[in-house]
Image (cartoon, rainbow, N blue to C red; front, side):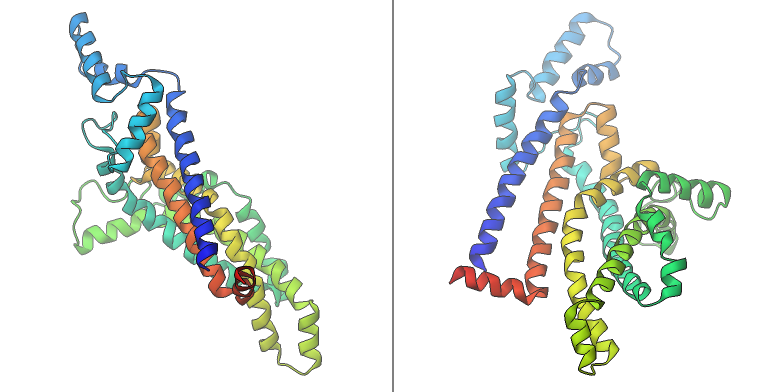
Length: 331
């Protein structure tokens, strides 16, 4: 097991290095000059003052050295935990902006991922044994899983927020409130959370339900299921074994879908102006904020890799055959 996870950690480390390097390069190939935008905010007309501010900010952000040296400085600062200053929210450090946004993104992602995976698998397994459900309600799952996150978010915002007026349409809480633990603020926080959560939950729920439905049907028709039934085993026992075997590919699918799910959460946050990581990405792109983009991408890459590693560990615990193969490989 130590060898297995050691190899996994090495693979994840190399993936992290390559992904962060690519994410560092992408903003620098974008057209435009972020320093010019920062200087323009000062509304200084004197050419000498403009040139002096340009030189000052380029030195401050480390953009007055060759690209290869910027890259080396980036890794040096990263190892010290320094993500630099944000151009969009100058002079706020990038780490401060990310720390403020992370709770909102995690509050959407974690419940949406876990609840949709659990509910979708349970519903799909139930639908596989109920013909009427399979023919009536489950087809909705095909529509949901084929729906883009952004389109569903726009549809929910238009129907339930603008037309029906049931939920607020944007932000994380009412502008008239100050963040606190008061019931009024928590109620506003929950009301603003519902639509972004629902847009993520529904799309993922449809995919997991369809996948589990197909896997359960396959497992119930497998030889071991027919053999158990021939021996007189109860149908519930057979279905339990079928569910345990069918859930294993769903765990693998969760690891493979994490990147797509995170991307969907970022797009959803932009639609609802939800102040999470996705909203930061939009602001960073609009202001060509290299450092904020780097910091946000770093968090996303690190989060997806950690989640995949946890899923790998869970898989070895859930599937006994994995441990047997690992022991054989170690021997």
